[in-house]
Image (tube, rainbow, N blue to C red):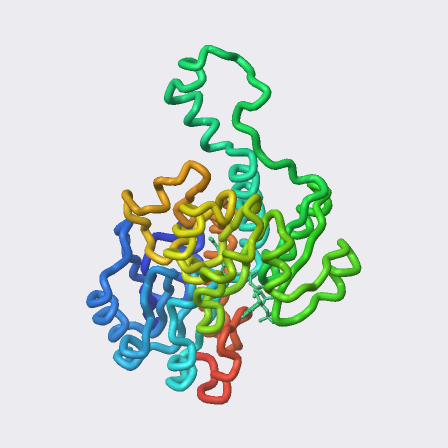
Length: 336
Ligand code: NAP
């Protein structure tokens, strides 16, 4: 009998077909995530789980899953999973790094440009009649924004995505890059002239601050009130990492009081963001519904890595993008 996998959202047919060669597959076919109670019941019955970031995979759920041996997450971030608990229980956790780097970096640039050049505001200006009402085709001061060439891009978290955003900033827009990370990246420093600074100086000096750290206990509210106060009043904050890295209340205060010039946000502490959330009231904030990796190429690539990890595990191999590497000391990969 094949092992059973529960997949918490619809994937691509060809990827499902690939998984079906090794597993009995059940797919949750609703648009919304399965409720926690449903997930709790499902995991009891299955050997493998394919999860998304909106699925809360906590220790309670993992302890309930007596047959579960692998959680294959369809995302590079895995802050929704209690990885430490999974490791203790001998449950493998995998993610999907790399294939979404380009898509996420490109969308980060979409937000940088939309925020600094007021692209969404400009669209509304035309669409809702303001331009027509003003009866002027062109005005030297209409919707002025910030030019990027020669400005300073501050990257917080120079990993895969942060590095690509930095590279585009230097090569595409002629920006200078400064960055903060736990570790320095001498290769990128040499390649694009990125300069390492502490967090305080990155926030103080950058014209565009772009956040790319994972959400961990250490990065929760990394961008808080006192750090937002360090930013230039002409600077913008871009977040395509995780909502929890930025203290939302502090950001609303910063925008209300003009500590910063604007923000481009793809991720939020509360997702989906409620329609009347204070952030929706600012013209100088560009909002997106967590879609930075939403290209066909990236999402299909992510699904393929999920399938490959499940197949690796089935074949008794260490899955190619294993998160909790120490788990191999607790249990060998495979269902035998
Ligand atoms: P990555 O390659 O692991 O890069 C993260 C970087 O942040 C690493 O260089 C890491 O350093 C650094 N870092 C970790 N903790 C830090 C801390 N406390 N202070 C400073 N730097 C720290 O990951 P990635 O592939 O670039 O992805 C980054 C994050 O983007 C993901 O975790 C995910 O949450 C988010 N993301 C969002 C979307 C979206 O749709 N909006 C899409 C993809 C990814 P070390 O390597 O030394 O730990």
